[in-house]
Length: 150
Image (cartoon, rainbow, N blue to C red; front, side, top):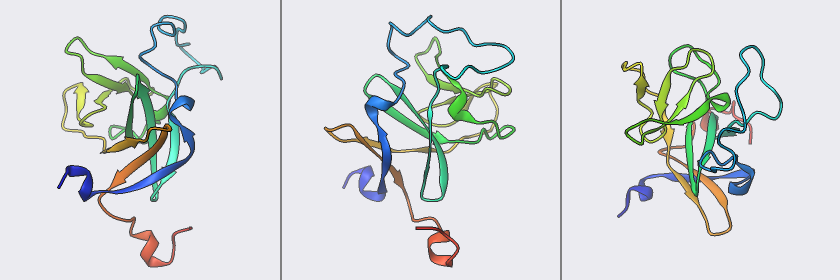
């Protein structure tokens, strides 16, 4: 029994791996410098999806897709608008656009500053056609309370 057997996987509708900005693409590195005061429409970013009553930021690095909760656990910043950074130890992090906190895309732990804040990460499957699915341990409780939308 594999770890993925413990999860319920939900397909991400209307987002394909090829739709995601590839943060590992060397042609795209250095092409963009982040403005200090406002964000340009063409700025690279993650994708925001809403699945199983969760808002989740998706990021692509090569052929790997990462999924992390949308809201920064520090002050609630929108992580899907953050940059992906590779630290000297090869850890991939998302940098919150509000206060520059960095969270590991693998574990969700705060890397800089080293604090006890953790962003929830989600297992990701990408099939041979590039369709993305996200793993959850259970259905959102709203589905059973009558308040969720289907």
